[in-house]
Amino acid sequence: MVKCCSAIGCASRCLPNSKLKGLTFHAFPTDENVKRNWVLAMKRLDVNAAGMWEPKKGDVLCSRHFKKTDFDRSAPNLKLKPGVIPSIFDSPYHLQVGL
Image 1 (cartoon, one colour):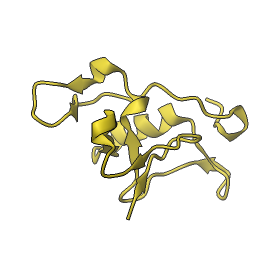
Image 2 (cartoon, rainbow, N blue to C red; image 1 turned 135 degrees about the horizontal axis):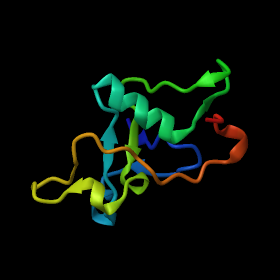
Image 3 (cartoon, rainbow, N blue to C red; image 1 turned 120 degrees about the vertical axis):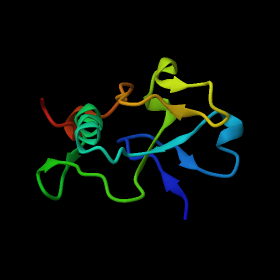
Image 4 (cartoon, rainbow, N blue to C red; image 1 turned 90 degrees about the vertical axis):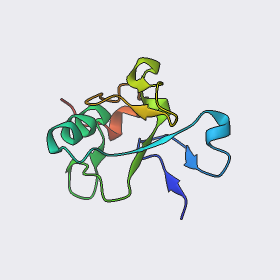
């Protein structure tokens, strides 16, 4: 099953050639506080429940939503530094939750 980035308007897909293009995908944190901060940063509205969207198991964000400084480049595999929050989004205003 192809994973898709959960950010509104992002067309990134996890395909076999994604890493060759410099694109990585990151699961939502298991720490509830950090996960909540990710969701708040996304400002994604759940149109079915008229509230804040909640990630499901298997949902991911692509590396396009993180700053270059958010990554630990010392590891063989590109990983996010602990506690970083995604900060690069270009979501349509009508699909954002006002904070």
